[in-house]
Image (tube, rainbow, N blue to C red; front, side, top):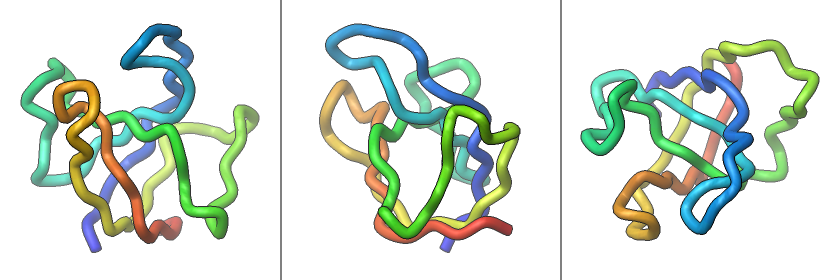
Length: 82
């Protein structure tokens, strides 16, 4: 598992944006964006987060880069709060 930080909600709307969360994974920066964050539009059902959650949220996760939208999205297979 990798250490990561959910830094906020992705409130953008567009073809490759909209909904989900911005996540920075320690040691694995997204080279396509300035702050190094990836976007995810889904979380495993066992992980509870909402628009009322307080950010940043430190987590451990298993993940991989998704090919959609130029590799800016990540798929999370396991996640837990630190």
